[in-house]
Figure 1 (cartoon, helix red, strand yellow):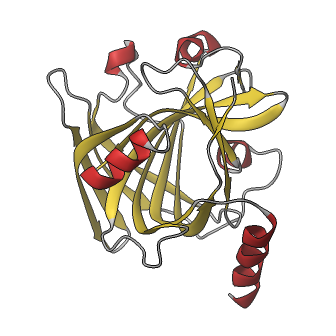
Figure 2 (cartoon, rainbow, N blue to C red):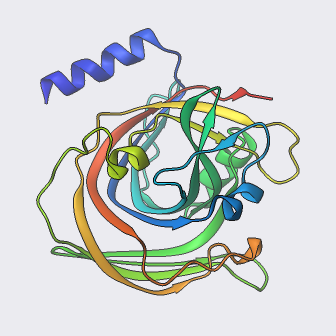
Figure 3 (cartoon, rainbow, N blue to C red):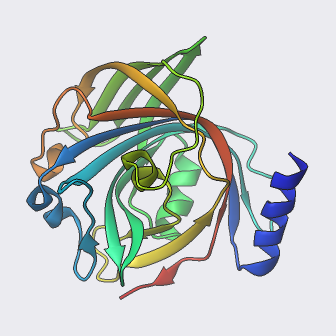
Length: 244
């Protein structure tokens, strides 16, 4: 624990940063799809990244705690749930995440993230329930019909392991740069993130409803190709920059 704190403090001393967050009880749900399915989601000049000859779409479910802006002495006092829709890209040969949409249950955080951090956030009614090793996650975006919804139940089925380089688990999760292009913006924005490497657990579950990509006319299969759980990390977010 002391080594982890020291590494976090060292990163803060060496890099510009704007906020810290704690992510807990993350579920990484991933689907393999043809590259052509993802290409319309990703603006040029970003390149769609592939593993095993396929592009990947991820839905990430988690709880956020201790959202804190750098120059504000106290963290935001409320925790909230999020559901992120993302895919994987390369920029100048470097692997990164591209955020398609992000849904959060807290209206203030949605406002700040959209206006100040240029992320494609939406407010949603999200319910997260945790009993033992079983997690239930229900989300309904607040907008006119058709509404993006997600409902599923998941449980862990393995002990923790660090994903090894060269595996799809490592390829999907160990990425520390993100891009976004909110609707109506001509610019692509880039940000960097630091956190300790992931410790993952294999998970399984049931998805009852998933219309998170209906606005893009994409229907994902009911069962993901990969499901993993992580207990959590503390993340440090760097400043947003214009990429193009």
